[in-house]
Image 1 (cartoon, rainbow, N blue to C red):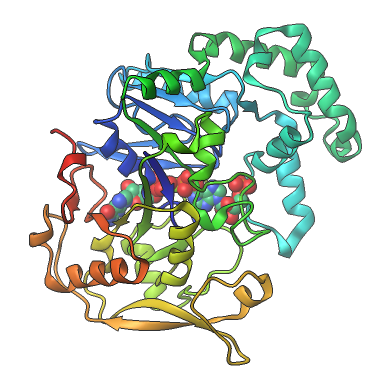
Image 2 (image 1 turned 180 degrees about the vertical axis):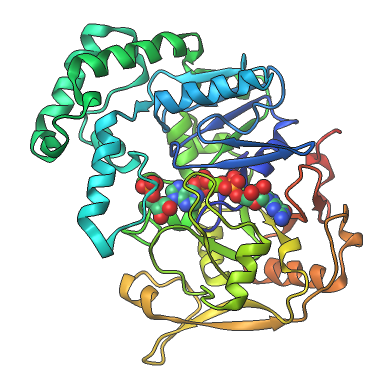
Length: 431
Ligand code: GDP
Ligand code: IMO
Ligand code: MG
């Protein structure tokens, strides 16, 4: 079962993964890196995961970081240590030996690239994600398994830095770029991570072969996909469901379900087109009520109405079987509610499908369907019947326009603050 972001990230994938992980035997992250920030609030305690899969709060649950993820080993070590200090059992963690490593020069080059772009910046998380995936494609990457052999590690670092000499010249005095220091630091990380290094693809096959459930946890969101998103304002990996196969090492026939996670409205961090963005008081209200501040970088998130043109595009790209709508509670008291059903271009053209041309996406105006809003605190609702009729109608309209059933709605950040919709009993957590 694959969990993917259906918008621009931060849809609540962490919360949904945590919820479904109870019934899963393996949870595996398949792409992205510590640009991700997945929040889980359990019994009032907040956890933010950047690399570790969101199933780790179940003691002993196998939680794998797949080959498709890029790992900053310092960040991963910090995350492991932080969990241990909070008394969380991390014995179920597994790290793919084939996953690529984010190196100090990747982080420096990410920032340098953004500074060079100036006003045209992408607004990356500056975690070195793009340069690391670029090295992977150029076959200059350094992988987790390389941490286990000092000679190989040193050689590979030299080979990777050599073509970057000119770009790295401004950082020549940075102690972290010293070959000896870097090799030593990464060998130390390697020693700490060694107990968790494994063949994570085989681990998935074994689970699938015995009929167990594997949950593939995506990071980022469909509209940030390197191939299908709003390029170049995208991340450097593929957050769509198909990438679960590549990033974990399974085949398409191993996947039964694809759950797309969307907010009941829309947000985006960083630059790039966002047709339904609200740059007014209402946008500010959504930001404030939804606590819309980036989990990783602390940047305010841009807010807007739910965009069904983009969501239908995400439904098709991921071949979604179900939709989850989080943060429905945030819309309470807003009347009317709006859903973008088509775009209109200045020259009169109407788009009901997501346009492929970047200049068009930048200049379209959204056209909305208006629906009556609902009032009151819905944070205590636990079933479809508990929700106000207008809230149910809002969810139905989304299902109707996307052709995908909404199976779950979020009514608050807490783990139990969800309402199951329709006949999805078999997937509900046992507790
Ligand atoms: P992810 O990156 O997709 O895992 O999402 P993030 O954790 O970055 O951002 C989602 C934010 O919304 C987190 O702060 C969650 O605690 C919060 N959240 C998730 N579901 C709900 C919900 O149904 N209602 C409210 N109010 N907050 C939610
Ligand atoms: P989760 O998994 C939201 C955005 C950045 C920037 C673009 C490229 O928490 O949903 P990158 O550092 O990846 O090169 O930045 O992608 N971005 C995210 N936005 N949620 C995320 O992850 C994101 N990861 C990257 O803001 O616009
Ligand atoms: Mg996030």
